Image 1 (cartoon, helix red, strand yellow):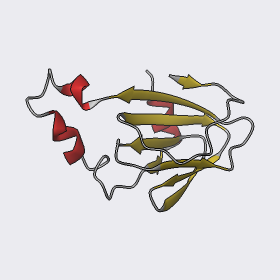
Image 2 (image 1 turned 90 degrees about the vertical axis):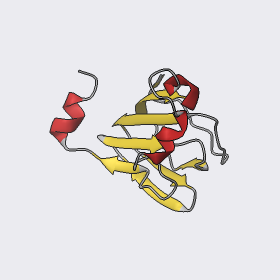
Image 3 (image 1 turned 45 degrees about the vertical axis):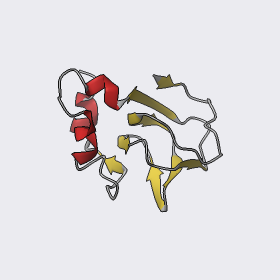
Length: 111
Protein backbone atom coordinates (compact mmCIF):
# COMPACT_ATOMS: atom_id res chain seq x y z
CA UNK A 1 0.00 0.00 0.00
CA UNK A 2 1.20 3.47 -0.78
CA UNK A 3 -0.11 6.55 0.97
CA UNK A 4 0.16 9.23 -1.74
CA UNK A 5 1.31 12.76 -0.91
CA UNK A 6 -1.60 14.83 0.35
CA UNK A 7 -3.66 11.92 1.68
CA UNK A 8 -4.68 12.90 5.18
CA UNK A 9 -4.29 10.22 7.85
CA UNK A 10 -6.99 9.97 10.48
CA UNK A 11 -6.41 12.10 13.56
CA UNK A 12 -8.49 9.71 15.69
CA UNK A 13 -6.58 7.16 17.84
CA UNK A 14 -7.21 3.55 16.78
CA UNK A 15 -5.96 -0.04 16.97
CA UNK A 16 -5.93 -2.59 14.17
CA UNK A 17 -5.95 -6.36 13.79
CA UNK A 18 -2.84 -6.41 11.60
CA UNK A 19 0.86 -5.62 11.57
CA UNK A 20 2.33 -2.72 9.60
CA UNK A 21 5.80 -1.99 8.28
CA UNK A 22 6.16 1.35 6.55
CA UNK A 23 8.86 3.60 5.18
CA UNK A 24 8.41 7.36 5.07
CA UNK A 25 9.48 8.65 1.65
CA UNK A 26 8.60 12.35 2.03
CA UNK A 27 7.17 14.86 4.47
CA UNK A 28 6.70 14.50 8.20
CA UNK A 29 4.16 13.32 10.73
CA UNK A 30 4.12 12.81 14.49
CA UNK A 31 3.10 9.31 15.51
CA UNK A 32 1.83 8.75 19.02
CA UNK A 33 2.16 4.99 19.54
CA UNK A 34 0.63 4.07 22.88
CA UNK A 35 2.24 6.73 25.13
CA UNK A 36 5.37 7.39 23.07
CA UNK A 37 5.71 10.20 20.50
CA UNK A 38 7.84 9.73 17.38
CA UNK A 39 8.83 12.26 14.74
CA UNK A 40 8.55 10.50 11.37
CA UNK A 41 10.61 11.95 8.51
CA UNK A 42 11.97 10.63 5.18
CA UNK A 43 14.01 7.48 5.67
CA UNK A 44 12.16 6.49 8.83
CA UNK A 45 10.97 2.91 9.24
CA UNK A 46 7.67 2.43 11.11
CA UNK A 47 6.96 -0.94 12.78
CA UNK A 48 3.55 -1.45 14.40
CA UNK A 49 1.89 -4.52 15.84
CA UNK A 50 -1.87 -4.91 16.30
CA UNK A 51 -1.76 -4.05 20.00
CA UNK A 52 -0.37 -0.55 19.38
CA UNK A 53 -2.71 2.40 19.80
CA UNK A 54 -1.93 4.66 16.81
CA UNK A 55 -2.56 8.38 16.69
CA UNK A 56 -1.21 10.40 13.74
CA UNK A 57 -0.65 14.11 14.40
CA UNK A 58 0.88 17.19 12.73
CA UNK A 59 1.02 15.66 9.24
CA UNK A 60 2.72 17.75 6.57
CA UNK A 61 0.93 18.22 3.25
CA UNK A 62 3.61 16.24 1.38
CA UNK A 63 3.74 13.26 3.78
CA UNK A 64 4.19 10.05 1.78
CA UNK A 65 4.80 6.51 2.99
CA UNK A 66 5.00 3.04 1.51
CA UNK A 67 3.64 0.32 3.79
CA UNK A 68 3.03 -3.38 3.99
CA UNK A 69 0.18 -4.77 6.11
CA UNK A 70 -0.21 -8.39 7.21
CA UNK A 71 -1.86 -10.59 9.86
CA UNK A 72 -0.52 -13.40 12.02
CA UNK A 73 -2.52 -15.80 9.82
CA UNK A 74 -0.34 -14.77 6.87
CA UNK A 75 2.59 -16.40 8.68
CA UNK A 76 0.75 -19.57 9.74
CA UNK A 77 1.95 -21.50 6.67
CA UNK A 78 5.73 -20.99 7.07
CA UNK A 79 5.65 -21.09 10.88
CA UNK A 80 3.92 -23.55 13.15
CA UNK A 81 3.34 -20.77 15.70
CA UNK A 82 1.99 -17.59 14.10
CA UNK A 83 2.31 -15.76 17.44
CA UNK A 84 6.06 -15.88 16.83
CA UNK A 85 5.70 -12.41 15.26
CA UNK A 86 5.07 -10.96 18.72
CA UNK A 87 8.39 -12.40 19.88
CA UNK A 88 10.39 -10.42 17.31
CA UNK A 89 12.07 -7.47 19.06
CA UNK A 90 10.56 -4.82 16.78
CA UNK A 91 6.98 -6.06 17.37
CA UNK A 92 7.42 -6.62 21.11
CA UNK A 93 5.01 -4.69 23.33
CA UNK A 94 7.77 -2.38 24.63
CA UNK A 95 9.60 -1.96 21.31
CA UNK A 96 10.69 1.26 19.68
CA UNK A 97 8.11 1.85 16.93
CA UNK A 98 10.09 4.15 14.67
CA UNK A 99 13.68 3.73 13.47
CA UNK A 100 15.62 6.17 11.31
CA UNK A 101 17.50 4.40 8.52
CA UNK A 102 20.74 5.49 6.93
CA UNK A 103 20.57 6.79 3.36
CA UNK A 104 22.14 3.52 2.18
CA UNK A 105 19.54 1.42 4.04
CA UNK A 106 16.71 3.60 2.71
CA UNK A 107 17.96 3.20 -0.87
CA UNK A 108 18.06 -0.59 -0.45
CA UNK A 109 14.41 -0.84 0.60
CA UNK A 110 12.30 -2.04 -2.29
CA UNK A 111 15.19 -3.40 -4.35
